[in-house]
Structure formats: structure tokens, C-alpha cells
Image (tube, rainbow, N blue to C red; front, side):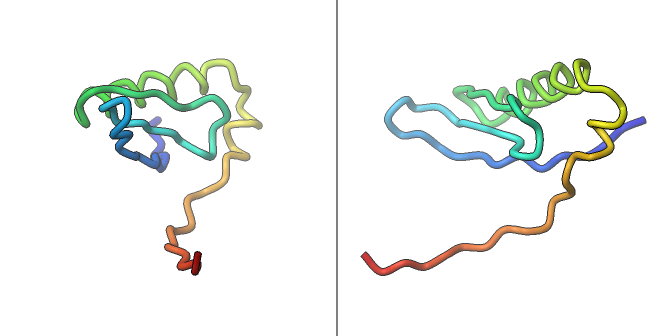
Length: 74
């Protein structure tokens, strides 16, 4: 069985790396110097996180609902 999870990816200009995280899975985050490498590493870390979870925990992972940009005056 396969499942889809949503990853948030940001570019960190200070370190020169992409940082990715799957917010619905605790501990599912990593970084890489290329977008393609990050994708591979995210798949690996999600698989590892799911290995230590029981079926009930996996079923309770929240579904992706959307992204919204928030404008704040500073």
C-alpha cells in the first residue's frame, strides 16, 4: 500500500540547503543541497518514522487541508 504525505520545503540561504518537513509526522524532517536529493531523503525519513508507528497511529495522521499566506503589517 502507498500513501501520500505533504512536505513543506524551504530554501535556507544561510546554509545553502533545502529544508523539508512533513508536519503531520513527528520527526519527519531533513535537508539536502538539491531539491532532488531532498525528495529522496524525505521519502526515507518518512518511511523510517512510519516503521516505528503502529497502525492506529498511522491511521490518525492528519490529512493535508491547504496552505494560506498570511499578511501582517510590521
